[in-house]
Length: 161
Image (cartoon, rainbow, N blue to C red):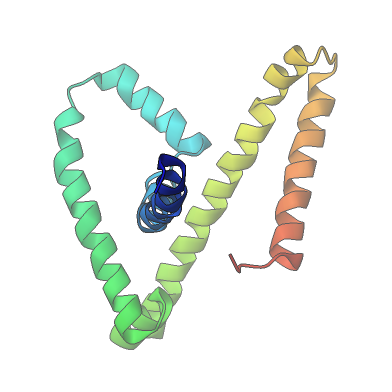
């Protein structure tokens, strides 16, 4: 057996192990980057400018707490087959569920507003890079385009991966 045939037979095993590794680690990488949006980056920048490295030690207990909460939520969803609203309603009643979901919706609306504000704030940078004169028109076009993209994704898109 020559070395070329050995390399050919070893290559699929390498790709298989890479794909297996990415399928296991991939959701964790996506979850870890979930909060790296405009509002998060602004908050991280301000906290870093104000406190420097003095809060760095908090990463360890916060990471442990995040792991515990994520694990509990995943297990509750896997075991019961129900979402968060169903579990809150079953344990605390309809009134508490209503107020919790109202707070969730307000948080989502605020997060969406920061996303569109980030798109609008990128217009002068993009306009200067592309030598476009009217930054206000570019802001309107970028925000309208982003809103249209979100609308079409939500109404016509699919959640299937």
